[in-house]
Amino acid sequence: MTSCLDNTEDMNGINNDEEISRLSAEIALLKVELNKKTALLKKKQKHCLTKFDINRYSRQMILPEIGVEGQKKLKTSSVLIIGVGGLGCPSSMYLASAGVGTIGLVDYDEVELSNLHRQLLHAQCNVGMRKVDSGKLSLNRMNEDVNIIVHDVQLDGHNSLDIFKQYDVIIDASDNLVTRYIINDTCVKAGKPLVSGSAIHCDGQLTVYNYKGSVCFRCLHPKPQSPETVGNCASAGVLGPVPGVIGVLQAMETIKIIVDHPNVLHNSLLLYDGGDCEFKKIKLTNVKRSGCICTKNPEDITINMDYEEFCGSKANDKFKVLNLLKENERITVLDLIELVSKKQPFLMIDVRKKVEYDMCHLPFSINIQLNDLKNKDTRSKLIKDINSFGNITPNLITICRRGNDSQRAVDELKKYTEVTNNVKWIKDVVGGLYEWSMQVDNDFPMY
Ligand SMILES: Nc1ncnc2c1ncn2[C@@H]1O[C@H](COP(=O)(O)OP(=O)(O)OP(=O)(O)O)[C@@H](O)[C@H]1O
Ligand SMILES: [Zn+2]
Image 1 (spheres, rainbow, N blue to C red):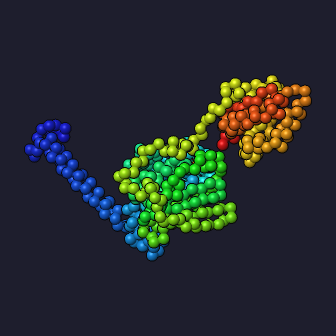
Image 2 (tube, rainbow, N blue to C red):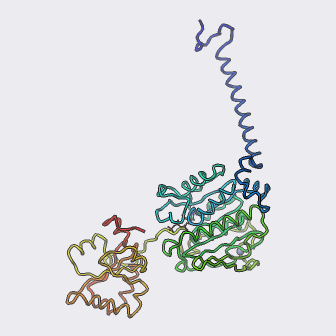
């Protein structure tokens, strides 16, 4: 009897090998055909609403501002969000839920514990995960039909144009000036509307640049603000709902742009004061600044300038360690431990803000904020503290969160002989309380 595996003819005289090859070729052809049909169907589906879409988006489709056409526009549109942080989380959540077809997420960072009070896409179990991946996971959990594209990069003048070209609307949800200029210039060159937001403390701002002939960010800010005057959430703090409000409004303006709503916020700046619960709208000029980048031909606009040099700051808010003092003007946390254990006399000044000192401090430190060291009365009080050591001349040690302001404090204190004459030496602690928490006491909060 002929076995199935034999390369011979069966009882009906059919060659098995030939038959298998013929069937395989037929299956391959059918697969190609099926793929073509599925792609066509998907393309068709992209442009029309399914029964599921209608059920899902019925409450917004019923609005005359949206309707069937608006919902189709949302489904076929693409939005790029730079920054999956305080602003990017709420804006992407509302856009994904509203049925925007494609959402691009740009972020170079990972989720930190201190992000969670306001960055609601990220959960506690996602701490340490790439922000774009955590964002994609949560957004697809909310709406699995949205195509989330992740760009795990730090946006710069070299990569921005290629990324922006793939999207219809751009949302600036970043947190630094350098990135704001990069985003603005790329939007102008690529001809994309820019929905810009910012939030710090209890205050927020919102506007739309480069839309239907409106001004761009550079028209209003031809020169960057000095880096010292620009705060960030890590140093200045922010109340969670504030970026929540602004991020949601960014989503609102984006939806309005997509459905071609007549009242997009492109000639006004909206100011939100969360403390007083007040919204104010300031009229912006609709005349582009003469000579501004947005008055040029797109081909003549270059976006690979050195943006960090232009702004005098970095394209991220990562902590930059300064070396202002000589090595022998600084001690490590281990030196500090030794001083404590040997009961060496010293006075430690914690130069952070009072609220930070109240959050956590070393028990043997006193709090004098860096700027207050300039104050004569404050210094007189300090001299009294130094003199309370009696006949012993103590050392003076400054400390702060990460070791930059403590160096500035040593430089400041060295200016005053009434201080220097009364102490053995003045030094700061390298790496500050962060190093203390890392190397000495893991229970000490690291923020
Ligand atoms: N050039 C850039 N490229 C990619 N992502 C950026 C760029 N600049 C800023 N971001 C991202 O934008 C987001 C801004 O979020 P947010 O203002 O809430 O600050 P954060 O950095 O998450 O938090 P914190 O300042 O408290 O550490 C961050 O996730 C940051 O990584
Ligand atoms: Zn301009």
